[in-house]
Image 1 (cartoon, rainbow, N blue to C red):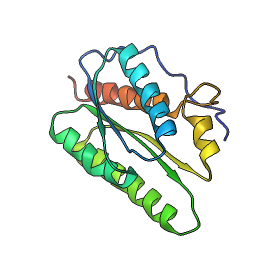
Image 2: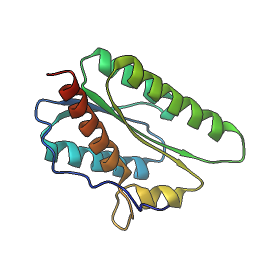
Image 3: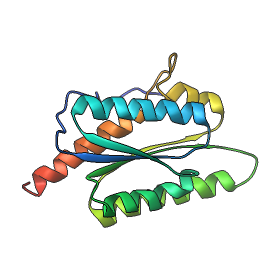
Length: 158
């Protein structure tokens, strides 16, 4: 885990931006840390937001699609996928990433990618924005979604 070169977060005004945070339910401690980080950034930026939970990371894309259909300006997708002893990790990681990318491109709106793909639980604890964590990937995903939503708004002249 490097963390080196990460952009600074915060300091933006996203008033009037509606964001849906979509989070899986696996690995509750890590996921709850990601959610808290995302919500903290969204609150600080003045964005309105809503949290919805789905069973796992595979289901994030369809929920993100529904959020956009319901009028969201951006989605923050949060999940945890930990490598096991079978190819399941690769399949779920690829399907989740591809699905979220497709949803963002089809909607023309940003999906902040806060899906952790990990070798072990400790890597997730280190990235979850918890006390003692070295990184806050939930906050980073929310910040990226907001910044991109604002760029899209500017490019569209809104």
